[in-house]
Length: 307
Length: 327
Image 1 (tube, rainbow over the protein chains, first blue to last red):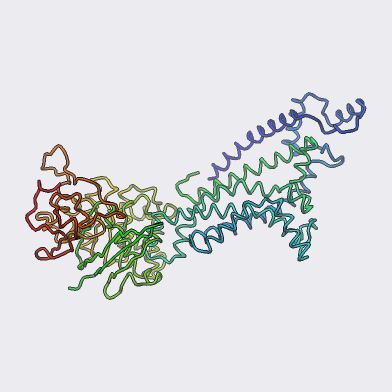
Image 2: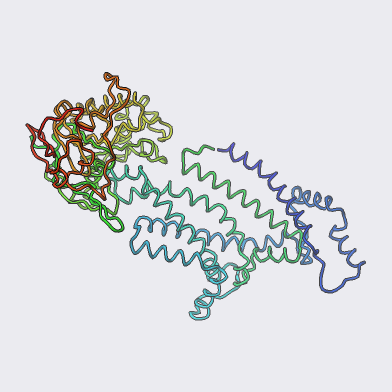
């Protein structure tokens, strides 16, 4: 197990390096630069700015210096968009926000999704099952950019229960709406995956064996069916965890939460090279970690899998 | 002596989209204490469904009617939780496919132990100790070590032994074995049958052996019930049915079995296919495949009637039947 983790972490380093190089090349291939604007700036001024940010050096040298700074000084460089702010600052400020609402949304989507999925499967073809399937289909097809304004309309404008935006240091009332808006479609997917995999397991021979032993139904479900049924769910949770904790530009825009999701999209639009790379590396590292956790969970769920 | 299990008019229906299929039709039989009853028939004859119904393990689109008296308790007339008191304790079942019938995510000692925790109110450690003893009894080497294993670490034969051990933990009155040897190698099959015989003697359990392998029947069973199209067509002692079959279908089954002494180059199967339960032939369900059928067989269904001492058959033909006239 420990050997497995160490091996995976060792593989993670070259993976991240490849990620940096590819992102860097793609970024440089995109037309424009951080300082291209509608105003024509005198060439001498541009030359000075380029020199200040090191953009006058050959590109391979820029790349190597960037990697050196990241690896040895954990410095993701200055932002090209905001003067006086480094990429480290932008991440340090935005990531806790997205992580807070993202992790809550992840937790909610997973717990509610799994419970609804199991309940629907156990009562297959009952009204409860039809209700669950109908509701999850609905939740699946409503995109979060529709969900978010509906939530604001209902809970802020009509009922006046919750603030329609802002972060307020992560006060619970500011967190609820972003969490619901982000979690809805993921919850629906998890519920549907759980339901179908649970149905498959409930029809399996070993669940029949468990029934034949005279175990009470709840014990058959919890002890015999749940763990194997969660395998496909877990493989879905890994990637979406990363997607959720790194936030969403839609959520950040609608609720003015000031998370990293919006910063990421803005940086791409503004060719804010260092911010793009910084957040990409963060996403990459999180993805690698999440996949590692999923693999460990796999081995726990299915004893046939040896790490 | 009163039978341990008396089944009366057992009927199993499946609702399909448009129609209804009767998988088991008015089945009657009694199982004596300590006896082994073989239930024989082709696929789709209803032999497995009848016993899954007794265990309450039917699919949701089925309805079961009739009586199954275990002592004075009707298994078919119990609530789900009441039935859970009996299955696994008084009536246990093992299944055809040992590769998929054990839970892949639980250790053997957990899967065995929970039966004793449930029915004998033993604590976990005591249950595991007894589980290990039972594993040893069914011939699993190093049972204490194996008890910690997961099912995928065992061979098919070993897994079937585990299934048998699991079924016998509470020393049930009845053990239903649904094609217990079909998925196993021939050498392992023989070991399994020896195991069944010795366990039956040790525990006094009545055994129901659902099979289409007449070799298995000859080796273990006392009595035999032949099923066709959801109904019993012949019942009697194994010796009577093997040496003097009275129903053309039983004769056909016996003749389609390979025999080491008969140096026949080809097997002699029953012609035709088993009927679809949705479209059972009119009259006797076997008539399209029967060489002895006459006009009455096409019009009327023969009832199960007495045909000598301790045996019954469902056939109008009263003359002697022998190989060569059937098939």
